[in-house]
Image 1 (cartoon, each protein chain N blue to C red):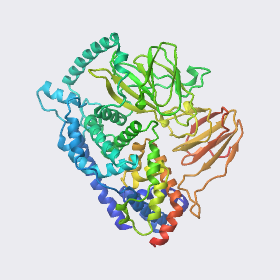
Image 2 (cartoon, rainbow over the protein chains, first blue to last red):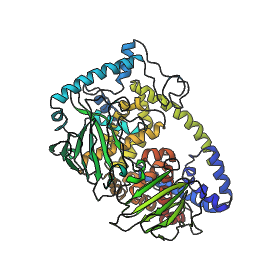
Image 3 (cartoon, chains in turn blue, purple):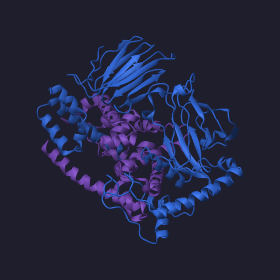
Image 4 (spheres, each protein chain N blue to C red):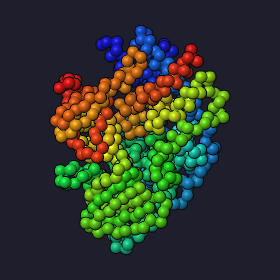
Length: 427
Length: 200
């Protein structure tokens, strides 16, 4: 391995090395390299300076001593329902002490016979019984609500959730993927030929896979940026301005009606409804805030907030504008990017990405790994290359590319992941 | 550099023990043990509050979000799967709470602007005593970094999250964490040159 290559490999470790946060092996590797590399030693020194300055920039007072008191006061308020109450119920119903699993409580999955991998606790029979009872109650409640003007109960509420509700909102995003309480299915353009589709059909399913009872839950869709328009295939309700503390104006939508959501608006979608949506906004990012809501004695957000991460979007629903995304080998075997407007930034973590302009000219500016410095300490940046329509470009692992296509012109780019380092850059 | 390696070894061992015990603390919180929440709060109150002040640029709001974060931990501990570290789980919750709070406060959720304006603020009195000579410009330059670069830099260098943990909190790949760090250093390089001159 050449010295320069080693520097590239080592460079990204230096911030962590400077604060001693690497594993022993990496610490040794870096220290060994530093013995004979003044450039990297300089970088370490720079990172030590940066760390010292960053700590100063972040310094400040301590929080008030009564923060916890206020938390307890909220927790003990009558309206606060502690989410893990099923465990308390379990104790009551089973009459025994709840046991934790031995070992590392689900960290690695061993010592948990019959337990679901990754689960911290093991639900028992009593839990299943509770769920069944709760499910029956939920169905009854849901039926009552559906007959009894449930939209009035769900709309017109204070958009600001109570602390407990907020707490629940917060907890959901840290639920690992696959255990979300609902699924958002993004369809591809082929499902809707001719549509300028950015975000496809959102399907909310009831049932065991989603944890949603059929009759009582709804989805609230909030738009953080951009304009989301669409078509509902069942009854839904839109409330303009509701999420900004305004007295929102509700509008009932029948099947087949169109809607348009902007920031501050919310759309309530009953379970079983699958609105077709598209982003017609000009903002670079379309961020959707999806909340689940179920009626109880007082309507509240029952589940979480899920932000549709750009990284999770299939390539063919790439949002408008500048995008920063990564395609990892294994995540995508083949994909296409439609209609990039403006510059986009690609980073390839592994493998080789082939970018082909099927009918488009595009400019591409490629940087090596940003840690890759020249002798003067500047980032190595390859000159802008122009790729004509029908041409292609290979981007290798560790490289960044900035793609630019003329604004306002639809472009079609294809991206293919190839095996690591088997293709040379120049075709 | 030997002393740094030794420090790394010690930290590695301590980290392992710390991670194990923190998982247990969260398990106790999930079981309704209030002492466990106090214990966790004792470990993280200062860094979490510091982080939230950076996110909100508002001491009062940061404190409210800190309360919200603790409530979220209390009500959501049963959902913790130990597939990430407790530390990154906490920061992810705090980050989301701050985002929600800023949504409530501002008509448009431009919470990144908070960071930007915070970075443009003047140094606070309590800092002046601890700013080493030559670092003032670097501190100011860090405050001028773009929000995404600044937050990534802070998570790694100040709150000592691993790249993987920072990526989990920020919901970005590890490669992006690395490139942001590198970009931050590149951006700070002119000021670093001056700081180096004064430090050496």
